[in-house]
Length: 316
Image 1 (cartoon, one colour):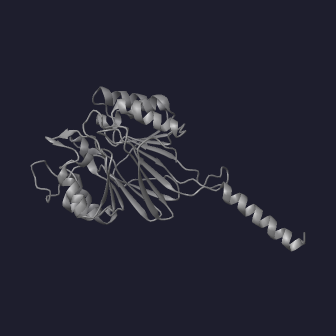
Image 2 (cartoon, helix red, strand yellow; image 1 turned 90 degrees about the vertical axis):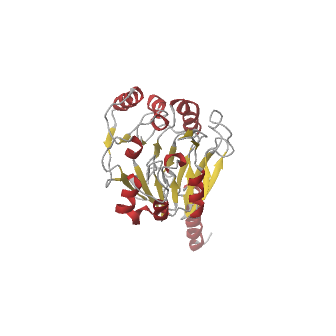
Image 3 (cartoon, one colour; image 1 turned 30 degrees about the vertical axis):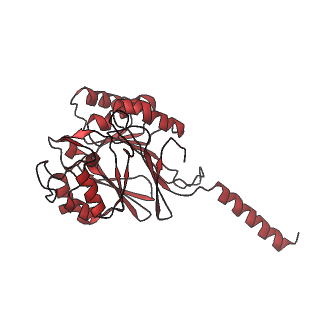
C-alpha cells in the first residue's frame, strides 16, 4: 500500500472508530405518569466516551408523585433504565403528590445532591423525607430565587422561586428555568397566579412576581404547566410572558375545587397561546386507574425538540 494512501486509510479508520463510540448529545426529560402528581426525570448530555475530559451526564429527579407511585412506577422505571445513582434529587415543595415518591428512591438509591426549599419538619411524611435525606450524608442545598445550579457546561439552570417562604406551600415551589442548545424549559411546580374566585385575567401571587421581575427570562419553548392544570394557575398574563410551544400537564383525573384537573379553562388558554399540549392523563377515565400508561419523553438534540408518548417503559 503506497505510504500517502496508507495514512489516509488509517485516518479514516480512526475517524470511523471514534464516531462509532460517540453518542448523540441530547437532553432527555421524562414526565412520568404518576397519576395526580409530578415526577420528572432528566438525563443531561453525555458524549458516551468515558475519561476523555468531556462532561459525562447526570441523572436528575424532580419530585416523585405519591409514595405508592414511587414504589410502583418510579422505581421500576429507574431500574429498567439501568439507573444506579441519582446525581441530583429535587423536592419542589412538601406536598405528598410531590415528595411521597421520593421516599422509596431515598431508601433504594444513592443520592449525591439534594435540593429543597426548607429543612423544616411539618407533618409525618415531610419528617420521613427529611430524615432519609439527612441519612444520605450528601450535599444538601436550600435554594431560592436568584441562584444557579451547575449541571455541566452544556446547560444553564436558574432558580426563579421561592423568593421567600410563605404559608401556602404551593407557592413555595422551586421553579427551574433550564436552557440547552437554545431551547428553554420552565418547570413550575405548583405555583399559582390567582385565588379561585378571581378572573383568569387577574395575575397575582407568584405568577405576578415572576412576570414583574423575570418577564424576559420566562419566555420558554417548553412549559411544565403549574399545579396539574388547576384554574388557579396559568393566568393569561403569565402565559403571555412564557408563550410555550409545548405544554406538559401532569394530571390524573383528580378533583380540585370541584373541577377535575386539568381544568378546561387552562387547556383553552394554552391553546389560545398556540401551545401543543401533552398530558399524562391522556385517555384516562378515572382517578384510580389513571397512573402508569402515559409517560412523556422530550428529547432536545441539535437544537430540535422531539416529543413523544411512551405508553410503556422503554429504554432510550
